[in-house]
Length: 565
Image (tube, rainbow, N blue to C red; front, side, top):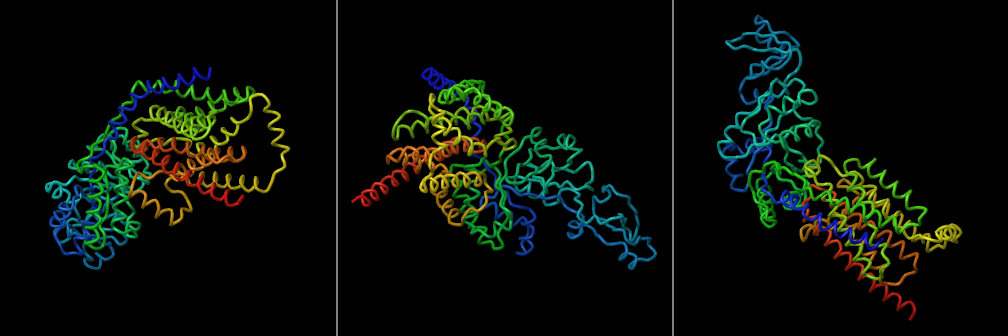
């Protein structure tokens, strides 16, 4: 039976391979747009005393292809001299006979008449002033005049509307916009007018890294979406221009972002260094500059064969268990996958089962580690085929079960070590075993490692030391950086399988090594990461981990010889 299941697993893998082709086509690099923030650019132009067109041309020479324009507010149009905005009490002092109302706010800027509030009109000095019962200084009115000028100069336009409760309706959306990047935490029209906004949008919407905007997912499904990366202004200023540029390159190379949105540094020299390093990094990664367009993704029909591989892998694991545990564990894993994972049931089942299959094989030495890596890569193939959809590739639908992948597989591995026949006697012996200090210390270290791995999942993990951040940056500059969980997990496996430790110590280290195999599948479950990047990251982790485990074996052998000399 076991041999037949392994053959089925291999056949399923071969039949699933064509399902990867649409994913590889979707992952093709670039083009990316370098987009500068319009408000920051206007502030720079004012500080330098340079016309906006002159500044735009200088940025064009540095590789900037786009500019993001915010909606103009009432106060901004008044500041530009397009009208005035004053409180009614002040106007009553200037013109007592005109009829201005104290406590009201008056303006004569273009577009203010569309603000949906009660209005009081006063004609004074040949101009019509419109009064409102509340402060409307920050109400957005529509696109600025400079947008048309930048478009004529050949810049790609990102437009930033704001979902203000007093926004004039219907909104004035510029036809020149190539991308809509919503300002704030809500899409324009959220929550009641999203269908109308979807009909009026002439370009895709941006999915901003690390920012949840209500209503954007709805619009993305109807008009398309492009992933956007940006650093917070205050954080960017803490970074050297070259360091910040490398983060942008990393986002384009390894996380599928095709709009790189930045704000200038306070000093032009720093901005120039930033853009030169950014362009150098993109060129080195083979990512061209240009106009990004939304990409559609249609899963291959061959992805259905991945379910054969999932079933074969689950069955193989259940064969390793005592017969009394096999059926209940199979039902538990299936219910967990379909009940918790829902539309990600197949990928979650892969992530729970495939990390420990190779380490449960009756092979010896490094061959066992190689089998563990092979099973993990087969699992990555099935997970990719079943989980790759347009929503997951854009990051709109995240993989469910990252925490489970770091906790359950080591426990399932330990359960798979129970003998099939005398499992009761083994459990009794474990229960009655006199715990020694060394065993307790090692168990505590492994539990601590498991806790750290669980808490450190995700990009916003707590307590990341500064030394580790520096090491990450250095590794990312040299290669596609592997996850440290994979490096140390592979090292633990190589060490445990080569030094001839007591059986219980070997099994404890292998349980920790299962985390590395689960982390491989977690990498591939980040669907917005290009597939080849995840593969190279996995191979780099195995290579570095194998080398680290080999070094550990040499050190252990030297210490052992010295101790017993």
